[in-house]
Length: 319
Image (spheres, rainbow, N blue to C red):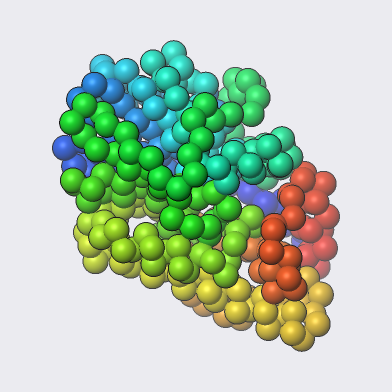
C-alpha cells in the first residue's frame, strides 16, 4: 500500500503553548509543528518566524495582544522556507516596519522561493490553513551579512548568521542579557530535522558556534522550548546526532553505489532506532536521504525541490 505523500494525511491539530521564558521573551510552540518566538521590548515587539499564512498568524497575534498592546515593529526570518515566512503580511497591520533576513536567506528566496512555496503547500496542507490569504512571496526589507543589533528601548537584541546548517542562510536571535536564544531550525528537539536543503557537513560546526553563545533557554524550530542549560545542550546534541548519523549513512550508501531506494534502506538501519518515534520523521526522511546522498556525491549546493521533483522522489521510494 502506497503511503500518503509527505504529510498530506496529517490532519490532527496540535495543542499550541505560549510560554514566557524571561521578562521579555515568549515561545509559541505546537507539539512538533513549526515554532515562533516573541520578544517584547520597551517600545515594540519582534517576531521570530511568522507562521505559514496570514490567517494562521492571527492566533499568534491574539496571544501577543493578551500580554501587550505595543506595536509589532520587526519580523525576523530564521530562513526562507515557506512554512516560516508566508504569514509575514499579517504583521503590517500590527505596526511592522521591517522584515529582516540574512543575505543567504534573501538569495535563496530569489533562487527558489516560488518553487519552495508550491512544494511545501502540497507536502503539508494542514500547516497552510488559510493559504488563500497569502499575497505571494515574503521579501525582506532589511538584509544583513553576518550580524546586526537592534534595540527595543533598552533591550539589546542580536540577530546573527553563525553558519549554514538547515539552510544556507540560517539566522538566530539572541538576548544576551537574558541568555535566551531563538535558533530556528538549526536546532530541533523531539522532532525530525528536515534536511532537504541542508548543508550537512557544515551543520555541526554551526551548532557548536551556537552552543558557544551560552544560552540558558532556547526555542528550537520544532519541539518544546528548552528551559535549562542542560536541556539546551540536549537539544544541540540531539540535532548534531541526527545530522551526523544521516550524512554518515549517505556517504556509506554513495560509496556502495546504491540507488536512492537502497540508500533509504541503509539509512533506516541507523536512523530508525534512534529517531523513528519523533514528530514528522516519516515526512522528513525521504527528503533527508535524498539530500545526504547528493551531498555525499559532491552536490554541495542543494538541488531545488519542486512539486514535481517531490512526487517523483516519493514515488521512487515506494514499494
